[in-house]
Amino acid sequence: MSTELIVKLRGMTGAGVVDCKNALKESGGDIDKACLWLREKGIASAVKKIGRSAKEGLVYSYIHGNGTLGVLVEVNCETDFVSKTEDFKNLVKEIAMQVAAVAPTYVSRQQVPLNILESEKKIYEAQLKEDKKPESVWSKIIEGKIEKFYSQVCLYDQIYMRDASGKETIKDLVTNVIAKVGENIVIKRFARFKLGEE
Image (cartoon, rainbow, N blue to C red; front, side):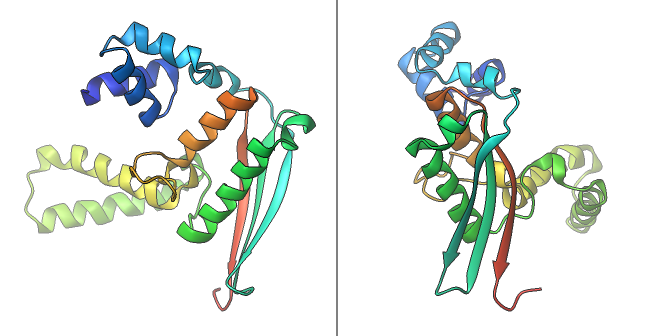
C-alpha cells in the first residue's frame, strides 16, 4: 500500500496510520471504499468528536518500582458515564504507564515552546553543515528530524509501548477509544516523578 494513499486517507478521515492501512487493504486500495470501511467501523466518525468539549474524566495515579517512580495523569471525556467505562479506565491506565515507561516532556506538539524548536533546528543545521550536506536538502532533512523529535518528547506522537508493529501512536490509541465510546477524549496533563531526579 502506497504511503501517499495512507497519508491522503488519514488527511480525509483523521484515522490512525494502522487503521488507514487496514482500510485500504480491505478495500483493495479504493480510497472511497476505505473511507466507508472506516465509517462503518466508527473510526472516521471519531474525528468529528475531537473538537467537542471534554470536562469530565479521571485523574489517575500509577506507582512503579516500590515507590521509586510515580505518574499522575488527567484524561478528560465528555460525560461522567463514559469516565466510568472499562474502555476509558483502561485507556487512562495505559497512558499513565506510557508516561512512566517512555518519559515524554509534553502532552502535544502544540505545547513545545518555540525557543526549544528553534534550538533543535539550529543543532540540526550545525550537524548538516558539519556533514557537508547541500543546503538545498536541509529543509526536508530538518523537517524529518523535527518529526522524530516530536515522537520522542510529545506523548500524543509517541509510539504506543505495547504496539508490536511500532506504528500505533498514543494519538491513534486515543482515537480508537473515541470511536468505541462515541465521545471526545483529551489527555489534559501529566506529571512524572522519579526518585532522586530534579
